[in-house]
Image (cartoon, rainbow, N blue to C red; front, side, top):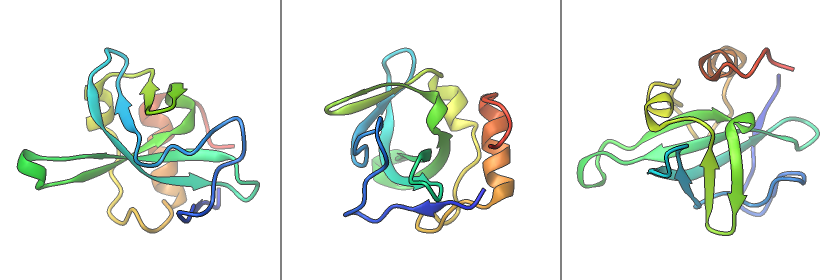
Length: 119
């Protein structure tokens, strides 16, 4: 599927809201990072989040590709996923979060989270 990264002034199509810079919590209510980028399809439907985690003292930031289907709840200041921290931290990473993930990476993320085949 052809995806694009939303620019700061762009927003995903409802029912999703602006999620960038919100804290991300896992299914056990642990803070695991924050939303960096949003990736949408040609219809502006939200398909993936870029969940950023920081290493020791902010060094070693990693960007994990998380399918929108894994979102359990969106609140004003946070996003809660229906998976644990370990699942996110073993997910495919984005080497270039400013670009859109290719089909191979999308497929790997869907398989990792067991959310079904690409649409």
